[in-house]
Length: 170
Image 1 (cartoon, rainbow, N blue to C red):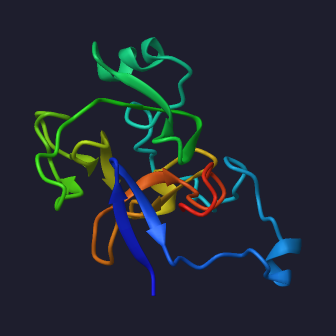
Image 2 (cartoon, helix red, strand yellow):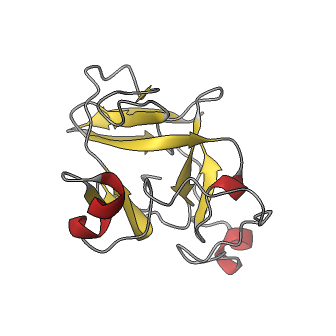
């Protein structure tokens, strides 16, 4: 059984499956973070031109997202974001809520959600329906790692397994 707990603002997995001691998993390391091959249809326009665009510093994000845009390269010292991820900060006022769709704090026009956990990490991201919308290598359309549940919206995010920097927590 997989169970998650919130400790000092960090969501950790307790009794999660692990590949330690698993001979099959030991020989198959898989792709490195950002090197995953996700099949894109080359027709669908990307939603990652402003939200989720590659960046190295906050100023790289301002042309697409305006003043106050943030470049994040890691989430809570648990997940690396390949080549950075342009976003804006937002607020979720409950630890029981992990996303707010069409959050006006992210984009008054709608279409962008605030995702995360109050007091730990929150950021703005548009929802997606398929991998082709993501448009960047190393990103696929998936639910939020650790906090997402079946039926939750999906977002263009990194490969949680390959980009985990805190083994045993992902």
